[in-house]
Image (cartoon, rainbow, N blue to C red; front, side, top):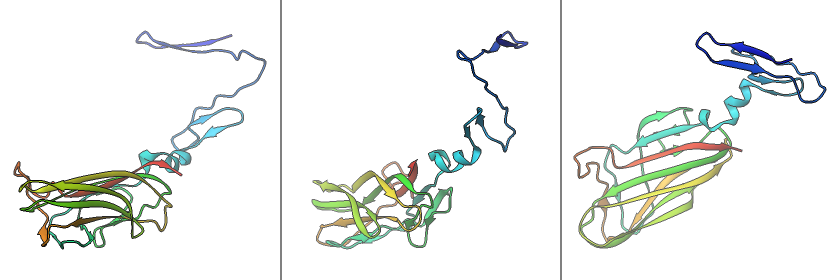
Length: 199
């Protein structure tokens, strides 16, 4: 027969009998025990700590010192100030993200620099020292140039690392712009990534 649990505020929960002849055991967990159990299977706390993106590596870094981008050269963009780094996987001294959980990561970055002439530039996500995804930026006027890139990247959780590179063909060196048009400083040049699905 069903068991009905009534709430003092008016609601209720009904535990019904199985439709077929079988024996089931419902176990209520403690904080450190299995979260869901039946007679044969369990979902444990340790599964959640390693198998869900919600607990995986997550970081956000900014550039706070202007950087020179040489014309016609792939230049690694530096981001030396962290806003957060949940798993200590981003290194401000090398501007590398080396996640410690194998899986698929969402990576994005934005860069802003000044140029007074039309040129074509590129912003790239690098994996292990090679271009993984590239975004082209076409500059037509005399305003500052900016670019945004985002992509998903698989990392093995041990040796794979991610960096950001930029290339501009203005004909002369240009500098990254730390102050934007709304007057914010150190907000427009950033690099971020997080686990979206474990391997």
